Each structure stands twice: as structure tokens, then as C-alpha cells.
Image (cartoon, helix red, strand yellow):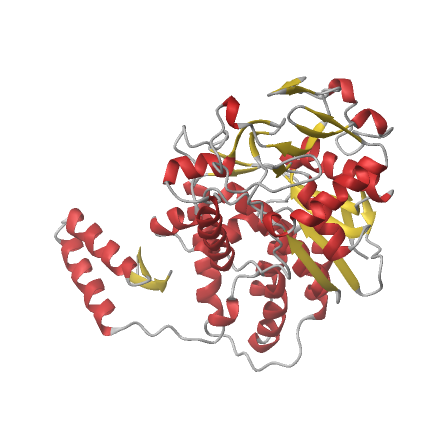
Length: 463
């Protein structure tokens, strides 16, 4: 039995798929105007572990992840500039060039962290017709009104608006006024934004991303894309919707409202959200200089899968504090695991059923990855034939995603060039030339190896 925490009901529930043996899963994807940072990547790692756990239980998972390339304003309350226009001004490129570049960068980060690709990556700009169709349905059903700057969803028409966050409409924080118009209720949100007229300072085709609609030339609001695309690719209701906790109060609340207003059903049965990643117990931000990308931690000499291991060490519903000391500890643990399994025999046909059961029970209890990792180390220490342990470890790695197969039974052959650099470094260390020693260590690292100083002498391992 799989039990998952449902934000909508605020409790763990037994997972019961809508269709036997199959799972429809929608994961909120990136806004592709800049690089994703490691805090963003925690959300995609969480969704990856969820998908892998479902697959380990025998389910066939269809995962859809949207690419937001239009409609996301710098302010979540339908104000500020479109993030794509901000990027256009910053980089001097077209919106489409920016979207293509950062979508490719995002998918590269997924591959680097061994996150399984979604089955479908629908782009908002490829589904304008579907979004217009849904807005027209909402209009027909009496859930919309039009102002001078766009079409809005009237949240007062939905009796249970706010059920996901648990906040009543009057408790939600929002600004009543929006540029060139006024909302009826503070919680109302844009379905379609009209492009500003030339007379108000708008330059013709400045946006590039704007379309004709029954309400005028403009672009969709941020929330409508997910309701429209999940309907197209998964139908509604579907099984599971994932995202970060920052999506609960606004984006996912509004998705639920749109789908309920247009289709008369709940968009997804289970809503799951991962907590924030903090840095040194504080918020991540560019201004503080503590916002790191995957490429940046790799450039600092870290194995990207050490970050994956670090994330696995915390429960997805708990805040996780990132420090380089914590990443060092995760990398050391991963290296230790890799080195210990190099001597294992990998031809085994039978695994350790008891530990496999314990591992699966941890994951099936709302993705208990810290407990699952503890079972891995219990397996390592178990007095069993290595071929039995290897069989079980490979099975566990189907969820862990640490690529342990590359190390199981593979003795490390150190190239002669690296051996010479290690010997040279050991010689200058004896001379206490620490500057040259560090230079040689970095040079060894550039080749993909790390040297550790022990009482028995230098030990060389792969990154």
C-alpha cells in the first residue's frame, strides 16, 4: 500500500489510481527566462522520486511537465513585467530564442541530476488555442468578466475557492488594482491579458508573444496553461499534481478553480508539494549571492549526484538547509558507497527480500527517502554474499538514481598520468609546499579524480 500526503485534505491517503496499473501525473515545470537553481531542482528531484517509486510498485506512469514560455509576470498578482520581456531586455534576444536556450539548459540539468525526462513537455506558446477554448468555456459558464486590460476569473462565483491553501478569500493577500483596470475581488486572477495599446507607450510587436483572441490581441495568464494542457494530455481528473509549496496559495489554487469552473471536476485527486531549500538557514536570492545552479556546484568540484544524494537525505515535506559542508558530507558518503561496492560480485540472481521490503515500505510511506537511505547502508553492512547485496542495491537504485551500476564490481584503474600527479603531490606535501599541493589536487580533479589523504597514504577515487 502506498500512502501519500495530500495537500488538499491535509493528511496521508492510500493511493488509489483512477485507472488500474496506470498513473497520470502533472508536474509544474520551469519558466524558461533564466537558469534553474538548485532550489528549483529540489522540486523536480521530488517529482522524480515519486515517479520512480510508483514505477517500482509496478505502475505505468505518464508524466507531463509544462514549459512556461509566456504569461508569467514578475508579480504573481497579475502585475509587473512579463518575465520573458525582462529577459529580452537583459540579453538582446527574441523571446523565442530565450525560451529555446533556457529550455535546453533546464533539460541538461535534469540529465545531469539523473532525473527521468517527462513523457511530454508541452509549451504554453504551442497551446494558445486550447487556452482560449478553456477561457471561452469559463466565460460561457459565467466565471469571467472583462476589464480594460483583460479577462479575469471571478473567484466569488466558486463557493470553495481557497480549499487547497485553507485560506478564505478575505485572508488572501492581493492588490485590488491592476494596471489599466480593476479586479472585482482581490483574489480574482487574469485569464487573458490584453497587450497595451500603442498610445500608452506600447511599441508594435514589442512582446513578440501575443495572439488574436475573442477579447483582443494579448497573451494568456500564467495559470490557464496548466489547466488547459493537463486537460489535453491527461484528461481530468487525473491522479497526482506536483509542485513546490510556493505554488499552493496562488498558482495551484487558481488551477483548481479554472478546471472546476470549466469542467465541473477537481483537476487532480492528489496534490503534493515539496518544501523550500534554504541556504545557510536563509532565503536563496541573487542579491545575497547564494543562488547556485547545477553547473556552478559542478564547477566547484562537486559530483552532481552528490547533490541528488543530499536531497534524498531530507524528507520532501521538510525544509532542507543547503550548506557546502552538508554537500561535502553527501559527496563523501556517496564516494564511500561507490568504493565499497567496487569489489562486489554482480552476477547474483537473488536479492535480500527482507531489506527490499523494508526499503519499499519506507518509500511507500509518503516517500521516506531518509529512511530508505538508512536501509541502503544497512544492506552494505549486512553479512551476506556480495552478489545478493548487489542484486538488491541495483533494485534500490531504480529509485535512488545514483547510477551505482557504473561502480558495482568495477575496479578503479588509475591512469598513469594521474598516478604521476599523485606522486608529485605527495612529494611536495612532504616539503610542505601547500600551494603547489593544492594546485596539483585541482589538476587531478580536472581529470575527474579526487585524492584523499589518509594515514595509509593518498587514496584516489573518481568524482
